[in-house]
Length: 341
Length: 257
Image 1 (cartoon, one colour):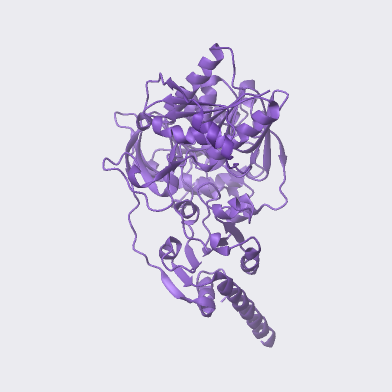
Image 2 (cartoon, each protein chain N blue to C red; image 1 turned 180 degrees about the vertical axis):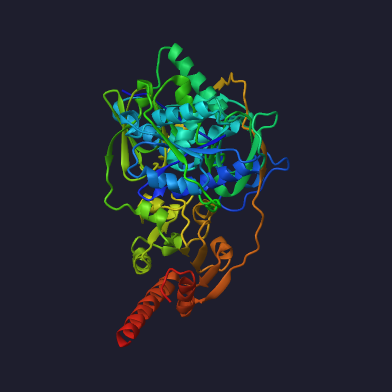
């Protein structure tokens, strides 16, 4: 039995939770159709739609914990709820996305269940747990520049699944899962660290970054805070988001929430345009899941250029304005041809 | 007054290709420098800020071998008052072992009559990325814990911790003593002053033995991603390549054709 903690947002299960379910479903099939259950904690206005979505990913039952005690996020309380479900099902694998929340909850779950936790798993190499042969997984380490083969010698095995390392796959002939809603009882100790208030950020650029179809990236090669004006214009023309390297935020040119990389956002846009970015391993860890990577760089031997799908060599301060002009020219051309027809 | 313990980890400084040792158990240390992760550096900064603001002391701790001394001295140079190294063979230690070793030091400190009101750690180590030492430590000490925090302030026996939630900034208020795992981005680590460096150079690093029977990390081996030949298509040089680049955007479906 595999239990997956699923995070939801306004669009249903998050992308990384869906990826986690894909990994769980794959393991379940290899074990001979082991059931996969999901647990959702906290209020969700549209759980029926989430359940349909989870059914398409092979989930048999959705456990939904709701009520006052889990209405606000408290990792220990939410984890206690996941542990209760895991124990009642005798789950031998408990997994979540390797997101900040998924990682925090799984750390609590592993500690509470005296279990081993493997973070940022990209593949499950063996299928048995605690029947003389522990689960062996491959996980990202060193910010994604190396992998570790790890033996998870406990039952349950607690895993987080690395974001954007798996393509979401729905199953053939899905059936709607049964939904089991319940109100958990949580101890006061587990509510010692809970959200007491939230503060809205005016620009939610990090969320925009995570979901953008196009990200324009800027690195040290941009040269200054002012140097970002052309990149911001390109971002606007493409309806995308701006992402930057750690050097850029350290130099104070752009705010930290725009940082892409090992200690920033991990992105998976359709297109990533990396301008003046050398391609240090920490940055690559955050952008490597982009479907198409275009590098603009003065150095043809920069790692970002050699790893990219496409590259333009030269001064980004000449090239980016030329791209902006070309985009405007084509847009005007399209509008003119529309008005003629 | 809040006494703060900040826990750091010596990690390889990797910017390019990683090379592994022959036994595939570690990074080949011959050609890399060592540092602490960005999260740890921010935890040290917050520790010194909290200690300074409350009139307490910041103590830096690492679980590791003697080669971690430079990282402890770096923390002393930016304002930590004491440094403790828990002597342990790090290669045989997993995250549960590290948490157990730190917990022993905290407990011993308590039996001697003092308490670390706040324990700060980096959210996850730059090398192993285990995401769990802070949580395991908090359970061992029966303290509240929160991870992914960018800013902390302490007043009246409460730590106010802020981090980025999925939709908004989330604020937590934890009664001390507490454990907080810090993420990069809320504070900028300070540079050490020359007097700070001189003082750190002379400071004594306290060493304690780790009395932990390690359960280990479960590592079978490290491996590198397969080397991929470069498949880059050079679209051109300079501004003349702009139309070709826009054609790629059209092909990718992000610009109308």
